[in-house]
Length: 385
Ligand SMILES: Cc1ncc(COP(=O)(O)O)c(C=O)c1O
Image: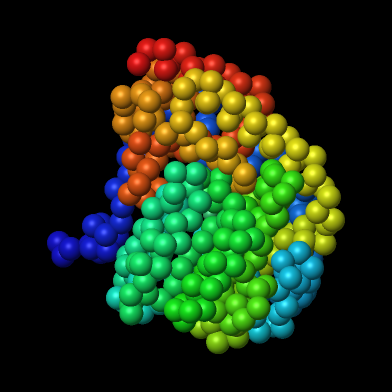
Protein backbone atom coordinates (compact mmCIF):
# COMPACT_ATOMS: atom_id res chain seq x y z
CA UNK A 1 0.00 0.00 0.00
CA UNK A 2 1.13 3.56 -0.61
CA UNK A 3 2.80 5.44 2.18
CA UNK A 4 0.74 7.32 4.76
CA UNK A 5 1.43 10.91 5.84
CA UNK A 6 5.12 11.44 6.45
CA UNK A 7 4.45 14.57 8.45
CA UNK A 8 2.30 12.72 10.94
CA UNK A 9 4.51 9.67 10.99
CA UNK A 10 7.97 11.20 11.15
CA UNK A 11 7.97 14.90 11.81
CA UNK A 12 6.35 14.97 15.21
CA UNK A 13 8.31 14.59 18.44
CA UNK A 14 8.43 11.11 19.86
CA UNK A 15 6.94 10.51 23.25
CA UNK A 16 6.45 7.47 25.37
CA UNK A 17 3.64 9.09 27.27
CA UNK A 18 1.05 6.65 25.97
CA UNK A 19 3.13 3.75 27.27
CA UNK A 20 3.24 5.47 30.63
CA UNK A 21 -0.50 5.89 30.86
CA UNK A 22 -1.07 2.35 29.61
CA UNK A 23 0.59 1.24 32.84
CA UNK A 24 -2.30 2.84 34.74
CA UNK A 25 -4.98 0.88 32.89
CA UNK A 26 -7.05 -1.28 35.22
CA UNK A 27 -5.40 0.06 38.38
CA UNK A 28 -7.60 1.79 40.97
CA UNK A 29 -4.75 2.97 43.20
CA UNK A 30 -3.25 5.40 40.69
CA UNK A 31 -3.07 9.11 41.56
CA UNK A 32 -2.68 11.11 38.40
CA UNK A 33 -0.57 14.24 38.55
CA UNK A 34 -0.30 13.98 34.82
CA UNK A 35 -3.19 15.81 33.32
CA UNK A 36 -3.89 19.52 32.72
CA UNK A 37 -7.49 19.33 33.80
CA UNK A 38 -8.89 21.50 36.64
CA UNK A 39 -10.79 19.39 39.15
CA UNK A 40 -13.68 21.67 40.23
CA UNK A 41 -17.19 21.51 38.77
CA UNK A 42 -18.02 23.61 35.73
CA UNK A 43 -20.15 26.54 37.01
CA UNK A 44 -23.91 25.90 36.72
CA UNK A 45 -24.67 28.88 34.43
CA UNK A 46 -22.46 27.32 31.75
CA UNK A 47 -24.24 23.99 31.97
CA UNK A 48 -27.72 25.52 32.10
CA UNK A 49 -26.94 27.85 29.19
CA UNK A 50 -26.05 24.83 27.10
CA UNK A 51 -29.10 22.82 28.21
CA UNK A 52 -31.52 25.71 27.60
CA UNK A 53 -30.15 26.11 24.08
CA UNK A 54 -30.69 22.45 23.36
CA UNK A 55 -34.24 22.66 24.72
CA UNK A 56 -34.84 25.42 22.16
CA UNK A 57 -33.65 23.05 19.44
CA UNK A 58 -30.48 24.97 18.78
CA UNK A 59 -28.93 21.99 17.11
CA UNK A 60 -28.03 23.28 13.66
CA UNK A 61 -24.89 24.88 12.22
CA UNK A 62 -23.77 27.98 14.05
CA UNK A 63 -22.43 31.03 12.19
CA UNK A 64 -18.84 30.11 11.24
CA UNK A 65 -17.20 32.70 13.48
CA UNK A 66 -19.55 32.04 16.37
CA UNK A 67 -22.93 33.35 17.52
CA UNK A 68 -23.05 37.18 17.59
CA UNK A 69 -24.02 37.31 21.31
CA UNK A 70 -20.93 35.33 22.23
CA UNK A 71 -18.64 37.39 19.99
CA UNK A 72 -19.98 40.52 21.73
CA UNK A 73 -19.50 38.98 25.17
CA UNK A 74 -15.92 37.93 24.37
CA UNK A 75 -15.37 41.48 23.06
CA UNK A 76 -16.53 42.87 26.43
CA UNK A 77 -14.37 40.39 28.32
CA UNK A 78 -11.16 41.13 26.42
CA UNK A 79 -11.81 44.86 26.78
CA UNK A 80 -12.47 44.89 30.53
CA UNK A 81 -10.13 42.10 31.64
CA UNK A 82 -7.34 42.23 29.06
CA UNK A 83 -7.51 45.85 27.89
CA UNK A 84 -7.82 44.79 24.23
CA UNK A 85 -10.25 46.88 22.21
CA UNK A 86 -11.93 45.03 19.37
CA UNK A 87 -14.72 45.17 16.86
CA UNK A 88 -16.10 41.73 17.86
CA UNK A 89 -17.57 40.84 14.47
CA UNK A 90 -14.21 41.54 12.81
CA UNK A 91 -11.53 40.68 15.35
CA UNK A 92 -12.83 37.59 17.18
CA UNK A 93 -13.51 34.01 16.18
CA UNK A 94 -14.91 31.25 18.41
CA UNK A 95 -12.88 28.05 18.23
CA UNK A 96 -12.91 24.45 19.39
CA UNK A 97 -10.90 25.12 22.52
CA UNK A 98 -7.54 26.78 22.86
CA UNK A 99 -6.16 23.97 20.72
CA UNK A 100 -8.05 25.01 17.64
CA UNK A 101 -7.34 28.67 18.28
CA UNK A 102 -3.70 27.63 17.93
CA UNK A 103 -4.36 25.67 14.74
CA UNK A 104 -6.16 28.64 13.18
CA UNK A 105 -3.27 30.88 14.12
CA UNK A 106 -0.71 28.60 12.50
CA UNK A 107 -2.91 28.22 9.42
CA UNK A 108 -3.44 31.95 8.98
CA UNK A 109 -0.01 33.47 9.53
CA UNK A 110 2.61 30.94 8.42
CA UNK A 111 4.01 29.81 5.09
CA UNK A 112 6.15 26.68 4.73
CA UNK A 113 9.74 27.45 5.70
CA UNK A 114 8.82 30.16 8.20
CA UNK A 115 10.42 30.07 11.63
CA UNK A 116 8.65 30.31 14.96
CA UNK A 117 10.61 31.07 18.12
CA UNK A 118 9.50 29.97 21.57
CA UNK A 119 11.00 29.59 25.00
CA UNK A 120 11.61 25.98 25.95
CA UNK A 121 10.37 23.95 27.80
CA UNK A 122 6.90 24.76 26.53
CA UNK A 123 3.45 23.29 25.80
CA UNK A 124 3.67 20.12 23.72
CA UNK A 125 1.18 21.06 20.95
CA UNK A 126 3.38 23.90 19.71
CA UNK A 127 6.02 21.36 18.71
CA UNK A 128 3.49 19.24 16.79
CA UNK A 129 1.71 22.11 15.06
CA UNK A 130 4.92 23.44 13.54
CA UNK A 131 5.55 20.45 11.25
CA UNK A 132 1.84 20.24 10.33
CA UNK A 133 2.21 23.66 8.69
CA UNK A 134 5.82 23.35 7.49
CA UNK A 135 6.96 25.72 10.22
CA UNK A 136 10.42 25.37 11.73
CA UNK A 137 10.01 25.67 15.51
CA UNK A 138 13.19 27.02 17.13
CA UNK A 139 13.54 26.54 20.86
CA UNK A 140 15.16 29.21 23.00
CA UNK A 141 16.31 27.65 26.26
CA UNK A 142 14.81 29.29 29.32
CA UNK A 143 17.09 30.45 32.11
CA UNK A 144 17.47 28.26 35.20
CA UNK A 145 14.48 29.95 36.86
CA UNK A 146 12.51 29.44 33.62
CA UNK A 147 12.51 33.14 32.82
CA UNK A 148 12.88 34.11 29.14
CA UNK A 149 16.39 34.50 27.74
CA UNK A 150 15.98 37.56 25.53
CA UNK A 151 19.60 37.69 24.46
CA UNK A 152 19.38 34.20 22.98
CA UNK A 153 16.00 35.06 21.51
CA UNK A 154 17.37 38.09 19.65
CA UNK A 155 20.41 36.16 18.47
CA UNK A 156 18.15 33.47 17.01
CA UNK A 157 16.10 35.79 14.82
CA UNK A 158 16.76 35.35 11.11
CA UNK A 159 15.14 36.68 7.94
CA UNK A 160 12.86 33.62 8.03
CA UNK A 161 11.58 34.30 11.55
CA UNK A 162 7.89 35.15 11.36
CA UNK A 163 6.65 34.97 14.93
CA UNK A 164 7.32 34.45 18.60
CA UNK A 165 4.92 32.36 20.66
CA UNK A 166 4.51 32.90 24.40
CA UNK A 167 2.37 31.21 27.00
CA UNK A 168 2.25 33.12 30.26
CA UNK A 169 1.45 31.75 32.83
CA UNK A 170 3.17 28.75 31.36
CA UNK A 171 2.51 25.07 30.95
CA UNK A 172 4.74 23.22 31.94
CA UNK A 173 7.03 25.53 33.97
CA UNK A 174 4.49 27.72 35.79
CA UNK A 175 6.52 30.80 34.80
CA UNK A 176 4.67 34.13 34.48
CA UNK A 177 6.10 37.11 32.57
CA UNK A 178 6.86 40.29 34.52
CA UNK A 179 5.82 43.70 33.11
CA UNK A 180 9.48 44.45 32.28
CA UNK A 181 9.82 41.17 30.38
CA UNK A 182 6.67 41.89 28.42
CA UNK A 183 8.03 45.32 27.48
CA UNK A 184 11.33 43.79 26.36
CA UNK A 185 9.46 41.24 24.29
CA UNK A 186 7.35 43.96 22.73
CA UNK A 187 10.47 45.91 21.70
CA UNK A 188 11.95 42.81 20.06
CA UNK A 189 8.72 42.06 18.21
CA UNK A 190 8.40 45.62 16.91
CA UNK A 191 12.08 46.03 16.05
CA UNK A 192 12.09 42.83 13.99
CA UNK A 193 8.64 43.19 12.41
CA UNK A 194 7.35 39.93 13.89
CA UNK A 195 4.00 38.53 14.95
CA UNK A 196 3.39 37.58 18.56
CA UNK A 197 1.18 34.64 19.44
CA UNK A 198 0.01 34.92 23.04
CA UNK A 199 -1.59 31.81 24.51
CA UNK A 200 -3.37 33.06 27.63
CA UNK A 201 -5.36 30.00 28.72
CA UNK A 202 -3.92 30.21 32.28
CA UNK A 203 -4.42 33.98 32.73
CA UNK A 204 -6.49 33.47 35.91
CA UNK A 205 -4.02 31.15 37.62
CA UNK A 206 -1.47 33.54 39.16
CA UNK A 207 -0.42 33.11 42.81
CA UNK A 208 1.82 36.09 43.55
CA UNK A 209 0.23 39.34 44.70
CA UNK A 210 2.82 41.41 42.87
CA UNK A 211 2.23 39.68 39.52
CA UNK A 212 -0.64 40.44 37.20
CA UNK A 213 -1.52 38.87 33.88
CA UNK A 214 -0.51 41.08 30.97
CA UNK A 215 -1.97 40.73 27.50
CA UNK A 216 0.60 41.96 24.99
CA UNK A 217 -2.21 42.58 22.48
CA UNK A 218 -3.26 45.51 24.69
CA UNK A 219 0.15 47.20 24.56
CA UNK A 220 0.77 50.21 22.31
CA UNK A 221 1.33 49.29 18.65
CA UNK A 222 0.87 45.58 19.39
CA UNK A 223 -2.75 44.83 18.47
CA UNK A 224 -2.01 44.63 14.74
CA UNK A 225 0.70 42.02 15.19
CA UNK A 226 -0.59 40.01 18.16
CA UNK A 227 -2.84 36.97 18.07
CA UNK A 228 -4.40 36.43 21.50
CA UNK A 229 -5.71 32.96 22.32
CA UNK A 230 -7.85 31.82 25.18
CA UNK A 231 -10.38 29.15 26.11
CA UNK A 232 -13.20 28.18 28.39
CA UNK A 233 -11.25 25.11 29.49
CA UNK A 234 -9.16 26.23 32.47
CA UNK A 235 -11.07 29.13 34.04
CA UNK A 236 -14.39 27.30 33.95
CA UNK A 237 -13.00 23.78 34.37
CA UNK A 238 -14.73 22.96 31.11
CA UNK A 239 -12.17 21.19 28.94
CA UNK A 240 -14.93 19.02 27.47
CA UNK A 241 -16.96 21.96 26.20
CA UNK A 242 -14.19 22.45 23.62
CA UNK A 243 -14.69 26.19 23.31
CA UNK A 244 -12.19 29.00 23.03
CA UNK A 245 -11.44 32.05 20.93
CA UNK A 246 -8.79 33.92 19.02
CA UNK A 247 -8.47 37.71 18.85
CA UNK A 248 -6.52 39.36 16.04
CA UNK A 249 -6.69 42.03 13.39
CA UNK A 250 -9.39 41.64 10.76
CA UNK A 251 -7.19 40.28 7.95
CA UNK A 252 -5.98 37.47 10.18
CA UNK A 253 -9.45 36.56 11.46
CA UNK A 254 -10.77 36.55 7.88
CA UNK A 255 -8.17 33.93 6.98
CA UNK A 256 -8.90 31.99 10.15
CA UNK A 257 -12.56 31.91 9.18
CA UNK A 258 -11.69 30.35 5.81
CA UNK A 259 -9.69 27.57 7.41
CA UNK A 260 -12.34 27.12 10.10
CA UNK A 261 -15.10 26.83 7.51
CA UNK A 262 -13.41 24.14 5.47
CA UNK A 263 -12.00 22.07 8.31
CA UNK A 264 -14.62 22.08 11.08
CA UNK A 265 -17.44 24.36 9.81
CA UNK A 266 -17.82 26.04 13.18
CA UNK A 267 -18.12 25.02 16.82
CA UNK A 268 -20.89 23.35 18.79
CA UNK A 269 -23.87 25.70 18.52
CA UNK A 270 -25.67 25.00 21.81
CA UNK A 271 -22.43 24.88 23.80
CA UNK A 272 -21.70 28.45 22.74
CA UNK A 273 -24.69 29.55 24.86
CA UNK A 274 -23.05 27.79 27.81
CA UNK A 275 -19.83 29.73 27.21
CA UNK A 276 -21.90 32.92 26.88
CA UNK A 277 -23.48 32.41 30.32
CA UNK A 278 -20.11 31.50 31.83
CA UNK A 279 -18.59 34.73 30.54
CA UNK A 280 -21.45 36.76 32.02
CA UNK A 281 -20.47 35.52 35.50
CA UNK A 282 -18.50 37.68 37.86
CA UNK A 283 -14.99 36.22 38.04
CA UNK A 284 -15.12 36.40 41.84
CA UNK A 285 -16.49 32.83 41.69
CA UNK A 286 -12.86 31.90 41.03
CA UNK A 287 -11.34 33.57 44.16
CA UNK A 288 -11.93 30.59 46.46
CA UNK A 289 -10.72 28.15 43.80
CA UNK A 290 -7.54 30.14 43.26
CA UNK A 291 -6.88 30.13 47.01
CA UNK A 292 -7.11 26.33 47.00
CA UNK A 293 -4.78 26.05 44.04
CA UNK A 294 -2.30 28.29 45.81
CA UNK A 295 -2.36 25.97 48.82
CA UNK A 296 -1.68 23.03 46.50
CA UNK A 297 1.12 24.92 44.80
CA UNK A 298 2.71 25.67 48.18
CA UNK A 299 2.38 22.08 49.38
CA UNK A 300 3.81 20.57 46.19
CA UNK A 301 6.72 22.98 46.05
CA UNK A 302 7.62 22.52 49.73
CA UNK A 303 7.41 18.71 49.58
CA UNK A 304 9.51 18.44 46.41
CA UNK A 305 12.13 20.75 47.85
CA UNK A 306 12.28 18.76 51.08
CA UNK A 307 12.74 15.57 49.05
CA UNK A 308 15.87 17.03 47.48
CA UNK A 309 14.60 18.04 44.04
CA UNK A 310 16.00 21.17 42.45
CA UNK A 311 12.77 23.03 41.90
CA UNK A 312 11.61 26.52 40.91
CA UNK A 313 8.54 27.85 42.71
CA UNK A 314 5.93 28.35 39.98
CA UNK A 315 4.06 31.66 40.02
CA UNK A 316 1.20 30.55 37.78
CA UNK A 317 -0.77 27.84 35.94
CA UNK A 318 -1.00 24.56 37.89
CA UNK A 319 2.20 22.79 37.01
CA UNK A 320 5.59 22.47 38.61
CA UNK A 321 8.72 21.25 36.87
CA UNK A 322 11.29 19.77 39.26
CA UNK A 323 14.71 18.77 37.99
CA UNK A 324 16.16 15.31 38.55
CA UNK A 325 19.74 16.50 38.58
CA UNK A 326 20.30 15.35 42.18
CA UNK A 327 19.07 11.84 41.35
CA UNK A 328 20.83 9.64 38.86
CA UNK A 329 17.82 8.71 36.72
CA UNK A 330 16.23 9.89 33.46
CA UNK A 331 12.79 11.49 33.48
CA UNK A 332 11.42 8.67 31.34
CA UNK A 333 12.64 5.98 33.73
CA UNK A 334 11.56 7.96 36.79
CA UNK A 335 7.99 8.36 35.47
CA UNK A 336 7.66 4.74 34.34
CA UNK A 337 8.97 3.34 37.60
CA UNK A 338 7.02 5.78 39.75
CA UNK A 339 3.85 4.66 37.99
CA UNK A 340 4.68 0.97 38.15
CA UNK A 341 5.99 0.86 41.71
CA UNK A 342 4.00 3.61 43.44
CA UNK A 343 0.96 4.25 41.26
CA UNK A 344 1.65 7.96 40.71
CA UNK A 345 1.47 9.43 37.22
CA UNK A 346 3.77 12.33 36.37
CA UNK A 347 4.89 13.38 32.91
CA UNK A 348 8.51 13.06 31.73
CA UNK A 349 9.95 16.43 30.79
CA UNK A 350 11.25 15.34 27.39
CA UNK A 351 7.87 15.86 25.75
CA UNK A 352 8.04 19.61 26.44
CA UNK A 353 11.05 20.27 24.23
CA UNK A 354 14.76 19.58 24.00
CA UNK A 355 15.89 21.12 27.28
CA UNK A 356 13.82 19.24 29.83
CA UNK A 357 15.02 15.66 29.53
CA UNK A 358 16.07 15.69 33.17
CA UNK A 359 12.85 17.23 34.44
CA UNK A 360 9.35 16.09 35.35
CA UNK A 361 6.07 17.90 34.91
CA UNK A 362 3.73 17.54 37.85
CA UNK A 363 0.19 18.90 37.70
CA UNK A 364 -1.22 19.92 41.08
CA UNK A 365 -4.81 20.23 39.85
CA UNK A 366 -5.72 17.50 42.33
CA UNK A 367 -7.40 17.72 45.74
CA UNK A 368 -5.08 18.34 48.67
CA UNK A 369 -5.45 14.92 50.35
CA UNK A 370 -4.57 13.07 47.16
CA UNK A 371 -1.74 15.45 46.52
CA UNK A 372 -0.32 14.77 50.00
CA UNK A 373 -0.60 11.03 49.43
CA UNK A 374 1.13 11.35 46.05
CA UNK A 375 3.94 13.38 47.64
CA UNK A 376 4.40 10.66 50.31
CA UNK A 377 4.60 8.02 47.59
CA UNK A 378 7.16 10.04 45.63
CA UNK A 379 9.22 10.45 48.81
CA UNK A 380 9.07 6.67 49.38
CA UNK A 381 10.10 6.08 45.78
CA UNK A 382 13.08 8.38 46.11
CA UNK A 383 14.28 6.35 49.09
CA UNK A 384 14.60 3.38 46.71
CA UNK A 385 16.86 5.19 44.23
C1 LIG B 1 -0.74 26.24 27.16
C2 LIG B 1 -1.95 25.58 26.64
N1 LIG B 1 -2.53 26.08 25.55
C3 LIG B 1 -3.63 25.51 25.02
C4 LIG B 1 -4.18 24.40 25.60
C5 LIG B 1 -5.37 23.76 24.96
O1 LIG B 1 -6.54 24.19 25.54
P1 LIG B 1 -7.93 23.50 25.18
O2 LIG B 1 -8.08 22.35 26.08
O3 LIG B 1 -8.91 24.60 25.43
O4 LIG B 1 -7.90 23.10 23.76
C6 LIG B 1 -3.63 23.85 26.75
C7 LIG B 1 -4.19 22.65 27.37
O5 LIG B 1 -3.67 22.06 28.28
C8 LIG B 1 -2.47 24.46 27.29
O6 LIG B 1 -1.87 23.98 28.39
